[in-house]
Length: 243
Image 1 (cartoon, rainbow, N blue to C red):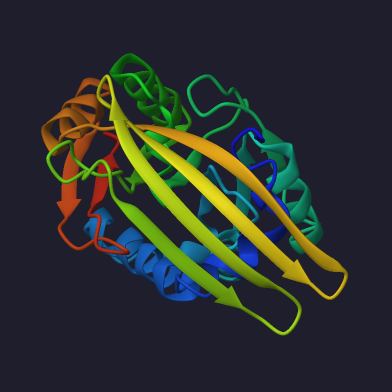
Image 2 (image 1 turned 180 degrees about the horizontal axis):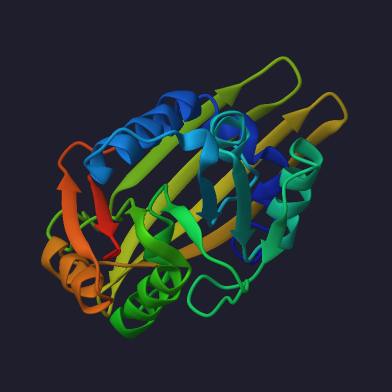
């Protein structure tokens, strides 16, 4: 069994580019950046930090629109792929709850429910505080939440198949609940011309209500908004830092 994202890093893009429209999601962030400010803004003059940037699939679009972008992730294997994709973008290896970059940004994103990796509420609140500390006055924080507790269905099995000319990937997820944490046992079967390999990862994600997310944002001093559908049906929280 590998640690989270250690095994999946090399096939992450093949799996999720078939399931998510990263361009559409990034474009929604671009649109919301202007609308949440309450005035017309030129994002070409704005800076953006993508927290939990993974392999850079959102960043590769942000870099075309924002004046300056950076990324941050805890997993070195994922960052290695992002560095190949975006060699001119500063990428930092750090935990979202305690990073310190020494500068502030106009926009900070934490997408694809990465905030769920903060398994306890104290850590989630600390991550929000850390991101808020890196926001400029009038800056906006976007957080795409993980499932609420009453939305999670333990004991379910999900399967996906990614089919590309180079690789075939079968992905099966068995979920369970333990002490308020959603546990996901992820089995991967990878087929290439050189042979077939497999590995298992276990991901643990904290389950928080929308009210808990709102409270975490308010306690960090942000004005809180919420987009019901969000980027992929999970909602999207916005937090604006006072000027």
